Image (cartoon, rainbow, N blue to C red; front, side, top):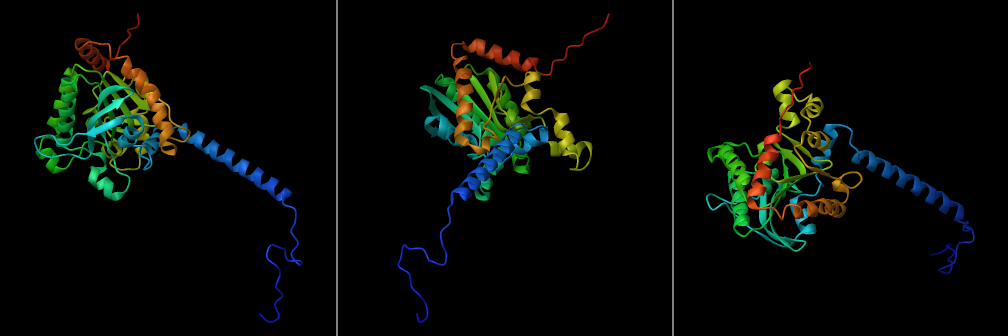
Length: 317
C-alpha cells in the first residue's frame, strides 16, 4: 500500500518498543491470588449456611446432584426397572438393580430434571401413585433376592393433582410405609436434596438415615406453612426456621442418624466430591446392617420410628 512502511514479521515496530512484563506479571499474580481467596471465602460461607432458608435454597439448587448423578458415580451395572404393573411407569422415581462395592443392591430414588424438558418428563421429582407402587414392587424384589435397599430422597412432595388423587395417592404412600416397615432386608435412606412431606417418607422408612449437609426434611414446605399460618408468602424464612428442617435439628430429634458433609459451597459445586463424601458414609452404614437377621432389622426399624416425636416431661419435686 503506498505510503505504508512494512516491517519484517517477528520483529517489533521501532516506534512501539516492548516493555518488561515482570512487574505486570507480579501484579496479575497478586490479583489472581486475591480473587481466589475471595472465591474460597464465599464458598466456605455458602457451605456454612446460617439459616434454614439458605439451606433450602442450596437443597433446591438447579445444579445440585440428583439420584442418577450419584448412581453414575457410586454404582456399577445399574439396570433400571420400569412400571408398577398396574397403571404406568412414573419417571419421577427411578429404581433398579446395581452393584455397590461388590454388594448386589436395589436402588430407589426420586429424580428431578436439569432443563425444562427433563423437568416436565420427571414431573419436577413429584411422584404419582404409580411411582410409589413401582418403588414397593422393586423393594419386594429386593427382599425376594435378599438384596439390601438404598433409597435417595429428593422431592418437594408427592404430586397433588386430581388424577393422582383419583388413583389413590394417599393410599399408595400409606401402603409403602406399612410394607417397608415389614421388609426383612437392610434399608439405608439418603436425603440428598429436598425431603418434602409424605412424598419423601414414601420411600424413606429405613434402618439408617443419612442426610446431606445442605438438604432439608420436613412435613411441609415453608411456602405451604406460610400460606396456612400467615395467608401469604412473605414469611417463608420464619416458617423455615420454625419447622426445624435442617440436619442439625433433625439429628438432635433422632429423625436422621448421620450428616454427610458437602464440598465447600454446596454439593452443586463438585458432583464428584459430593459423591465421594456420600460414599464414605454410605458404605459403613450399609455394612453395619448386613449381619442383622430379618427379625432384628424389622424390630430396629420399628423402634427407630416409634421413638420419633416422643417427649419426656420432667416433673419438678
